[in-house]
Length: 484
Ligand SMILES: Nc1ncnc2c1ncn2[C@@H]1O[C@H](COP(=O)(O)OP(=O)(O)OP(=O)(O)O)[C@@H](O)[C@H]1O
Image (spheres, rainbow, N blue to C red):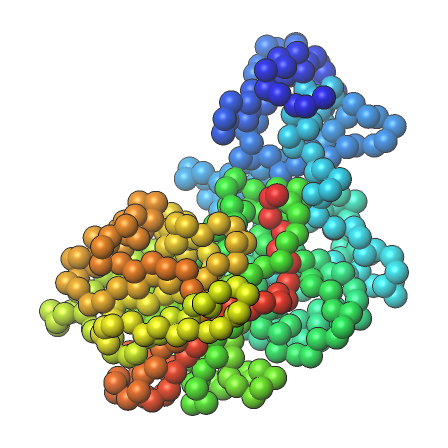
């Protein structure tokens, strides 16, 4: 029977909550999905809303009417608690529609259990805790919430999954190179519960694509629990559309290939690390060219500058606010000068047709720029819709660009990005679907500050006559779990 909200009979049932008689009522009305239950003995009414529910799991085959409802109580301003509180209850004889809406379905349930056997006895489910991501809450979330959720699905630490905590900024890369890549090459299906921001995903992707891949390579699946600062991927994939910090998606979602881009650089390009105080060489691709892969954004100009300037311990304390603080400083320099006019030649790649795959590079008319940003996602942080046309996992690379303009005008235009992405409707803003973008400095910028490129939060400094080129990648490296 198709589940229609008009079938009111199955929206009300008499049952039990933790063994106490109760009347259930399930309300479904557009976005609103609410379960209320009235206890028979006291008339007390409690409610549970969709945003707080992680999942509904059967208790035992012998008790088909019993379900565990896993849910969270989000942190509120009144308490010192910064992470959601995990809660569960046993509900007996729930409304059918509620069971339908909140149970992991056979086809969409993520393969948490799939690799318990047949892989030399070692679990291929990994939990990676990036301890310093965002506000540093990942460890707390794992031990107080995630571990409980996994145990309700029947999974135990050591027996069924391995926990890895980051010790340094290299931990995720090393783990990927030593464990995930060799096992993927042996044909193992691996699942990674990743408690981090976008940086953790990018580290996994780069380490996977930086090594050799065999013919048996199986893309690991990442369930992202967004604990970073910007969490662009999670916002763009609707993983943050509820209060469960990715747990509802982890349990009920399905895995799909994560679209990627590749940024290649001229030989003198270097990664800036430790707040820009040190430089490291980039990894090389199979053709010996310096390359980084990304899933979110590659930018030059105003955006790259504010990400780089705000990547300090001091700024990080302010969370996502740091980007707006750095933006104001860049637009209204203390000495009262105008914001910088970024100089380079910018070209866009468009394939002339899908069939011929003939490449056509088209150079932008202006040689001075303010904003040049290519992205695979819609939002760079909560509420900041940089590319409103982007749909989750659509694999389209979109370029947002504009030339120099007065600071107030930049503020006004970027403010529109916080109003649903209306900046792209402005005449001064270019917004297009591209296959690639290239920035050639050609000696136009002497000061290194204006030659910084941002790839998913990492900052790469290009030499004065260097270049960067971004292209979509055809074959992905990982799957990501999101709601179907
Ligand atoms: N124990 C640690 N010691 C040093 N560096 C760490 C440690 N744990 C994580 N890191 C580093 O901290 C950074 C966190 O990046 P991540 O992207 O996960 O979070 P974020 O930058 O706060 O979020 P977002 O990228 O979503 O804005 C990464 O560079 C990671 O390597």
